[in-house]
Length: 139
Image 1 (cartoon, rainbow, N blue to C red):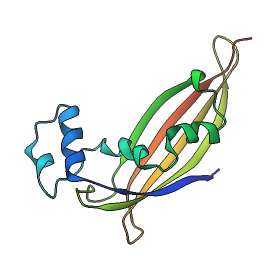
Image 2 (image 1 turned 90 degrees about the vertical axis):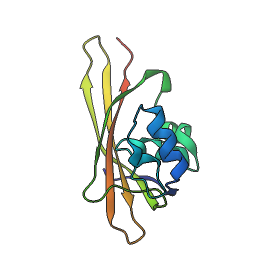
Image 3 (image 1 turned 90 degrees about the horizontal axis):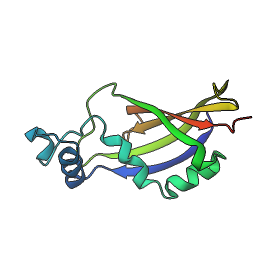
Image 4 (image 1 turned 60 degrees about the vertical axis):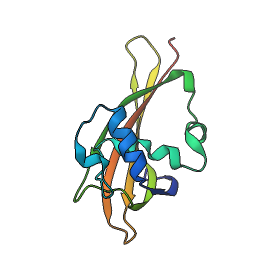
């Protein structure tokens, strides 16, 4: 696989970090300063910076939206968490596509999307793996 689906820039804004922290119930004062680190799941919002939006991604993958489920998502950070003010390049690729027989008939397609977040020097500062499931029609 490894098909690149898109690449775009994401600037981590201090106000957005604080909004996300509040929305997720965090009371940690560290998320509200000028050089605030991101909450670990903040990068889920990176799709809002994509120039084409999430609908274009669904179309590009050829998915039938009413049959799509979010199967899970995980984040990893090989070093320091990104902070407010950081400018990241977001690169989205298809890591794998597999099919399995559904218990109620029809096949289910599992698509693992790998998103890499790169610092200006090209170093990967974070990765996200999201599993998208498309349920097949029952026979």
